[in-house]
Image 1 (spheres, rainbow, N blue to C red):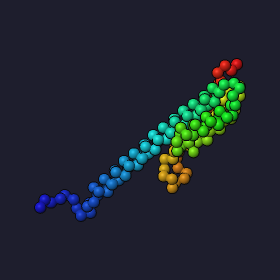
Image 2: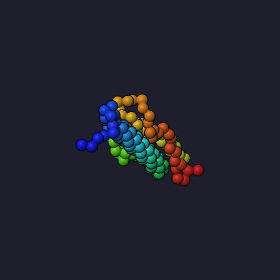
Image 3: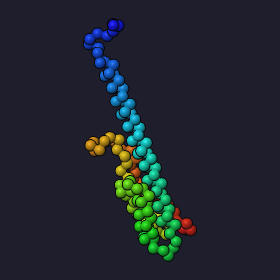
Image 4: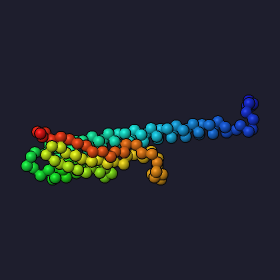
Length: 136
């Protein structure tokens, strides 16, 4: 039987180090995945908000802009899927020269839902402005 150079007090030290290394890798992978999902969600929400404001701005003169805005916002929520229920799309103005749409999205938390006050990635609170075609 081969003799080990380890003393009795060092047994299991390789296991502890391996478990610590695995835990660090899992935490890093989870953080990376949450950041990626948060940035993807932000990009998607901003794109849909801009498209919604553009669709409202393309409403022909003489057509009920408020009704078109409601339809465009409803379509945007549908396009966002489950995320649409967490996004606020508020039409601030539909003037003759410009359409202003406020978009608010809480983002994606980096920590589990049990921890409420953790860092967030991808939160949005901005106004999208689109000029109307033919506006002077």
